[in-house]
Length: 217
Image 1 (cartoon, helix red, strand yellow):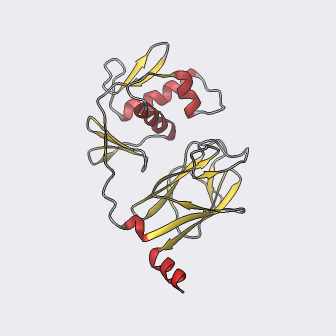
Image 2: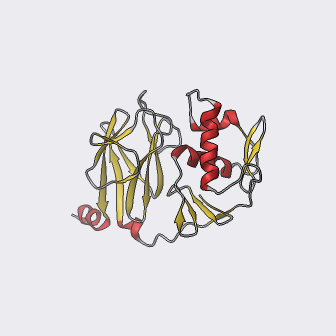
Image 3: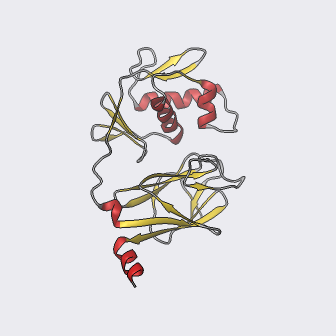
């Protein structure tokens, strides 16, 4: 999903918020909040529903939610007293109040068709598709990981423009490449071993011409 509002473009697939040529950095929770508000616009989303989406099965304080809202407003150059995009409904929750419209995907050329990507786990292999591939204990994820060390929306791999980017989504137990815990998105290359919580897997990338030679002998 790509949505344009004001001078901004929100791209769910690449997890980017841009204003013109400038990327506006958003933390994982602020990104999820904007995603939720845009998908439900112009409806009001209760604070309880926001907390359930951003912090599933975790109790957080009102001040924690308020901090995420403030971070999102700062990224949008929005004013709480005269909001253009993010409206507070006192005693209830929040709503996206600006004019917004879905736009088509960016021109990706032929890069995405040049390779195939998959994850190799101990018990199975999973194909990855262009755009967002969600990893966690969530039904619409590309990989369901039934482990108490894995968060509901734990991490994601974005396939875009012939590259694969791994990003932790604010999980409790972390995402690790080697023994290094991720603090920001990182590109993956063929053979990279990483783990989500305590669940390990290997990233595999195969060029289209390699697949052809293999299939054709």
